[in-house]
Picture 1: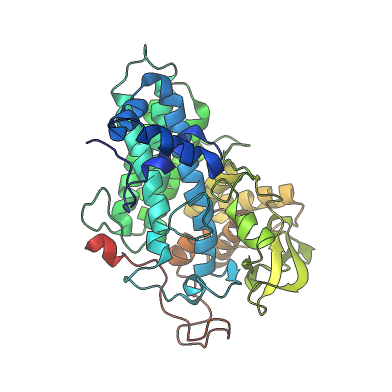
Picture 2 (picture 1 turned 90 degrees about the vertical axis):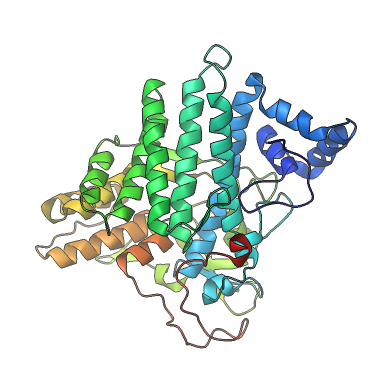
Length: 430
């Protein structure tokens, strides 16, 4: 199928210009218009674009592009998922349906907004779908090349599989349902199964390429997918713990950002610290353990209000600039999956290792319920603004507060809704 320059974007695809911008990883202020001008000078611009993408010499740029697509979707989802839950307080006078939990299947920016260079839209479905499509498309193209044509092709294939797996994973945690390549609506568990399959491929490909970073990234992701599936499938919890146990101490895989434009930025910093259109929500203020401040949830009270003039503008200080990296996968997450599965003394040992590294007092208990609750609390703190909050609230049955029917703040009006995951949009169904 020929790709072409088009004025519209699909939910499961991507604009040609945006894809080329991702491939080049350059500023869009002049590059997009220049690229379009060059394409329009030829008789069949779609053929030029397809030929460019299918040139083996551009294989590395193709993978850089899919990683850029994922990074944008990832950062945006952290803010949106945090706002649906209790991690991020919305501080603007529009797009408050995340915070108020009132999006419906009729759509809105959550469904159709994009990761645009010039846009400040907080979107979820299209950016994650675009990242998923970019990764799968890159894998398909790379599969048509040979090792002789593309140096390090095995690692590039592993990267495409890994980022596809994470895109499927986040779609399954964010959405009540989603479609892949125009197919039927898939459930959250079905999306986690697809994520597991993609990440398994990444482990195989990364191992063959001797790329330990991609293998460990995929192991953490597959453990995350499997722990999600453990609610309905026997044996998945043990498989998740086995994956997590293979991740070495000190491992982290980061999404990379730059301050060149909104699309390339760390959007957690951009929305909260720079724009003042969101803030850290009150359940994450002043967290301590046995009276000792927890440095993993570092926040600063600005003493001001966000743009709506009502919400306290409480800043996160985990990320210190628009160019700050965000962890996609890390050793501490893997350890907390093991703690969740094993419980008891094993969980306490893991908690106290994390506490020691954070300078916090030791935790002790002989109550299985208390130990499990502490594991959940450790996840909330250790993985603060790293994409886990909404999925954890749903998976652990944590109440969404304020409860449905409670009046919303005067800057938005109405009442809080009962939405906990983002609805499968009608525009996709149609």
